[in-house]
Every structure is written in structure tokens, then in C-alpha cells.
Image (tube, rainbow, N blue to C red):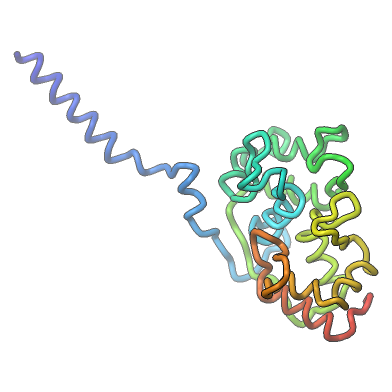
Amino acid sequence: MKKFKIFSLLFVGIVIAYTSCKHEVPTISEIDTLPPAITVNCSTDSVYFVNTIQPLLISGCAMSRCHDAISHEEGINLSTYSGVMREVVAGNATKSELYKSMIRTDEDRMPPPPAAAFTADQLTKVRTWINQGAKNNGCSSCDSTDIKFSTAVKVIIQNKCQGCHNPASLGGGVDLSTYTAIKASAASGKLYGSVSWASGFSKMPQTVKLPDCEITQIKKWIDAGSLNN
């Protein structure tokens, strides 16, 4: 009887300890309910998930029939931070399946041929973000007074739109891979209508709307004549 009482007390103690600790580490599903850590000013030494990595992956990987929330090819969903983290070893890009699949040169590259591979600059940003800890972070960096094509509009579209709108992947039949094509889309009203998610236009990007500042940059560029400046 004495041994039974001791065992019972130990069992109760274990249960109490377990129930008091089991919520200390969030599950994968809970990670996406936590807002990203946003800093006021961007550091030139850091790469941010919200500003750079998430738009890049949504444009080039988390698209329909690939790794979005609906298709999730091979069980991979890259439309959320938690989904991305399933393919990442924080602090070590060379051991991260996400990065390894992006730098491949065969048919298993992501995105797969004939889609264009990520540029060297984009791969560097992904590698740096992972090696810096793969944080769910962001910062405020947009300058709405910068409305040049080369420093604002081209950069936004290249990182957040071209993954779905290039000659190898004409989402909606739209090509945004060149200045001429972008200008034509601007002239038709489709570019602004899509990025502003206006009624009657297809949303671009489909999952995460561009920040208001970037939409303003595109609108001002269009209003100024859509110059190749």
C-alpha cells in the first residue's frame, strides 16, 4: 500500500509538471499566429522575411500547382512562415532543403525549368536570411518619393511578381519580365488594378498584398508617364 501511494504521488507530480510546461514551445500551426517582429528602420546588414524572403517565395515557389496552401506539391507549403521553416535549418543554409533546391542546376531545381532560376542576388539574400537565423522579421524601408523604374518599380515587380509573370510562366497570360511589357500593363490599367486589388482585376500577388507604400510608388510612376528611368 505504501509503495502504491508513493507511485501515485510520483505520477501526479509528473502530470502536473507536464501540463505546466507543454505550452512553452509553440507548435508549427501556432507559429503563424505570432506576428512578425517589425523594426522601424531596416539594417543594410540584415535580410528580412516579410520584406524580401516571403514575397520572393510566393512569387517563385508558392504559386498554384506548386507549393501554395492548396496544391502543396510533395507536401510542401511555402506560403507561410511555418511552412517555410519545415524546409529550413535556421543558421545553416547549406543544410536547408529550401536553399539546396534553389541552387540546383538540374530538373529538380526550384522553380523547375523552364521557369527562370532565382538570380544570384536573390539566392544570396535567401542564404543570408537563413544564416542569420531565419527569423520571422520585417522592417520599414519603403520611400514613397522614390518612383524611378530602376530603383523602385523594377525591384518590386522583379521580387514579387515576375515569378508568376515571365515567358516560361505566364500567369493570366501576363508577362512582366521586361520594361516594355511592364509599361504595356501599366498603360492598360492592369498593373495598378492588380497590385491595388481593385474590383474586377486579378490580385497580384495573390496571397499577400503589397505594402501601401509600394503600391503608391507604382501609382506615382504610372502617373508620371511610366518612364524607363
